[in-house]
Length: 159
Ligand SMILES: [Zn+2]
Image (cartoon, rainbow, N blue to C red; front, side, top):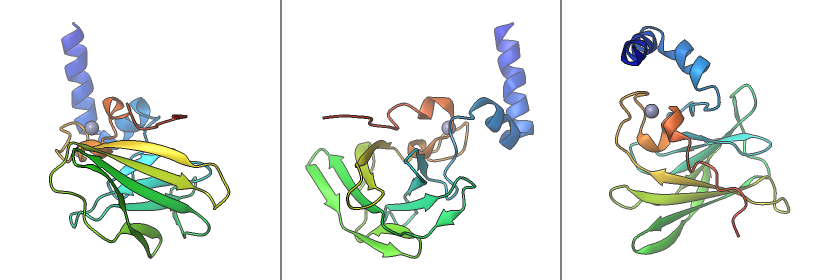
């Protein structure tokens, strides 16, 4: 019986993917560019790695429209087996973009620190960077918008 319900649910998801995803995963807003949406305050931020492997962060208002960078400060740190590497960022359009590409492969952690301005409290987000495509949402696993993709999204208060 449970299997039957699950199959029906899957069929519904395929039939009306966007609506079903909204109903059941309302806590996860998919990043508009295909990246991971970080629940930063006061603006949402999207961590996105395009095919050129240069990591980027873009800010969005509540209507999910990109907003220009004003006073925000962003740091992106790669925590791989060989150690921690802070990526040098530059402003490109409305985004912070890394000057260098991410290390080869995946399976490492990326920490994104966002400050709304120079004096505000840093907000840290951890992303486990996996690039394989999720079969449920068709997004890269690090940016998965399914419920299971939520864990580890927010670092909270870690000292
Ligand atoms: Zn998914």
